[in-house]
Length: 126
Image (cartoon, rainbow, N blue to C red; front, side, top):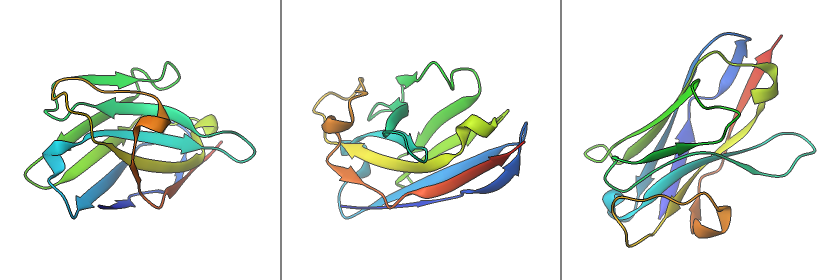
């Protein structure tokens, strides 16, 4: 399985970005998908996740109401729409795939995710 993330960049506070992550090598709908981030000097943290079927989503409290995770199983791609960005959102963002057997649930623990993308840097200036 390979994950290719894209869409990061530099944006002013209050702006928006959309991250994309394409999965190849296996059937995309077999995986719940998650986004995690790691800021300089900090540990990697959960951002958002979506179930295999796309019907269930979850968010970290710090991004709830500002970020939206979605997936297009026909395009083998998961997205993270980020609005109202804040300087504290600055981090490397990673997408990850969780081979859960359950179609309608998602998990937040990073140890659940077997496959990881290379990361894409998001920088929010004040």
